[in-house]
Length: 279
Image 1: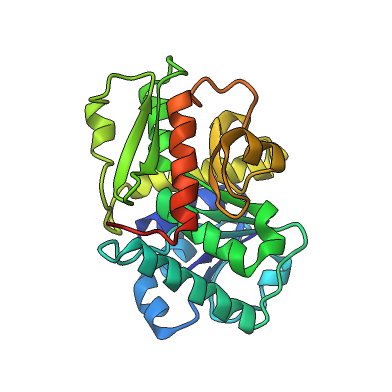
Image 2: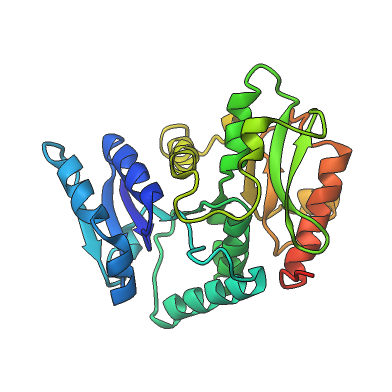
């Protein structure tokens, strides 16, 4: 399987890359500009060392030649300046994708596009969908927060945590089936993250999604929830806009999607449509 990791800049890409190599992926690390080559640091060479003795390849690329044959295009994170406003981040993402489009990027007909990063991943995915609307149904967004809650509450399927925003755009965690004070470990995932935050958990959930695509034939039921653009049925059920990817169930039986959570999904969709305004 041919996989492209876009703009690798932190340990998430390194950890993910090692997992992908062990799962028979050939890796291309897309670093088109000097700033990206500086950000990647030793990740490329570290992964090349990991690939020694394997049948897989690792290469750092700065052109778009690999994209027409890539099965997976992964954006582990684009939020390198978490102190910036969400609206500025959204504009940056849209400009980035517009530049790719102006460079005549071509995608594989069967490509899967993955964004990590929780709510920042939803923003990136929405902007990607604005520039490449024909690819919206290929897009998935992972939540390391939700992934962590699945493990913390492993034997209590109704208890989960979703990364959300308040009406004024500030970050929050929404617990379902849990005391309002939540869980001490999961509460450490609140607020803005640096590039060095929760890299292992981010890599874990992205890799789990990749395995669902590669090994389970796009069966995402084990994930329980996934960021994606809604179908018409989901738009009607959750009162969300067609151009706003939000957290949606991956199977019919999902007790986590409570009335309170559905209200938060509607708020999240409206906030994204507003241009990610923050009071």
